Image 1: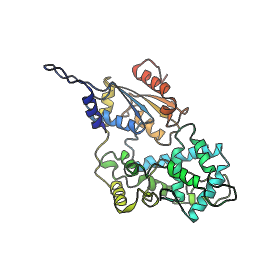
Image 2: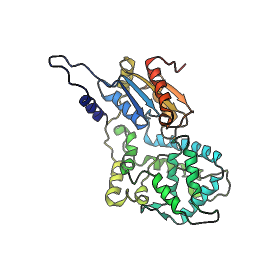
Image 3: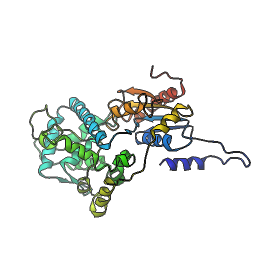
Image 4: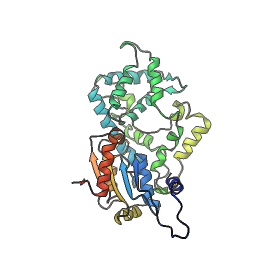
Length: 345
């Protein structure tokens, strides 16, 4: 991706005049949202002349952390987001348990041909950190599951909504390559289904994370937690376009790939920002369920690879802050990077 961006930059620029010495002509500014921020860190690590200004929004990669540890921490973030959701919609605790119980007894067939299992239903939680309306959207979807409270058959509208809300059938590469974004060289390879292993470790003993357990409890004090942005080996069984012999073999081969190349160079990133040729600022969202806050702080702390990156920490926005209030966030970060906005104070 980074090398492609460099090729595009060269194609967009006019060629230097004949007889003149070539001079560096980097991008003036880059804005890395989420995985785009991960790519920006690779830019700072590998490219001789990275962008003059590098901005991050919810996109500080957890470099130097094993993928298993990243997901272990993210599961806790997802738990907190679940509790916030159920605090807003306490009536959904029982409804979610009813749905999970029914799916544990008999998975439903989706319009796409996929299989709606309890575990696949709980993957809807990956949307809970998507913006101000994410809770309301989830509540509306759950409310359509049954026509009447005493009903036990799912409505077609509910099944269609679940199908449309999950991106993996339309974008199987998202499933295949998602965990590879944490595979920073051989030290952190293979990823070996890290999120699944982290989940299994949490439910090794009776746990609040075990949906098979919590869905059977009558108490609202033990809700059933949705999952976050995580992929699992069983998705080849539940998603129509992710399974089959070839796709299953590919998914497992990528999960066990142990020779991923390096993504980041901590010393080079530190040096690039220290010499002042590239200035940087980042928005870090405290409640982010996709990019772990604590990992971000380790990377940007004094002595870290991004110690010269100015950081704006907020819980006013979710991971979608750039989409929800983009002009304000961009102006603030650009001002921080260039020195016109004094944050941190």
